[in-house]
Image (cartoon, rainbow, N blue to C red):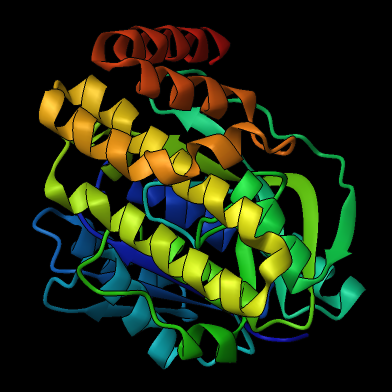
Length: 324
């Protein structure tokens, strides 16, 4: 059995951490090490990590000065002794066959990276039941990048994936930048010989009101557009058949930031800035048959002005909430 290193960044998650760690120690795949990186958490998270490390010899704890999510992942990866690495965020949790399933995809297709599916779990809602069946396939790097950017069965997230360790060592996460997975995942996939993708839901992604995705709008949010721009240039050079997908990812990030702008009450200045950022790609994305209709509609509403866009985004948010 290949050894798997599970890297868990830890910061201000004492409410959720035990649930996360209990799901990890229950794994059916036994040749694992767990690296908990306490990123100078101001609550009791560091002490909780130490308690689990005393009980389970395969758990290691790093206590470090605060470096953010990227720095914590990088620190854990550097000391990993496994053949493969997977990441789990400490406010999320996984099914007991999380590692086993990702490894089975690696072995089935002799892949460098495997990708599983996830389920949205709101922390104030009843627990959802994961889909158990699995359909899997092997993708080329180009196809995987296209699917990832269109959001078709391959997520951009660092978690719910398993990587050959050499790949994540080659491409550390950018410290100080949010949306760090947007800046990194495409590079890792681009260096693979193939990617194994399965649709079994083995990861619970907890939706928290205080998470990055629900934070107030700030200049830091434009890190996502910076990463999407870098990916577009990368794809133009290495995988030109994926350019349309990378353009869609950039436009979708503009839409995502516009939604956050409206939710947080940011004003006309940010609206105009995001509208201008999306303008060069609006036509191409709206003509792309693979692009999601919900993104197209909101892009077009942005061209119509602040108030039509705000109303369209409000309608979309209400519709999304009804589906939860």
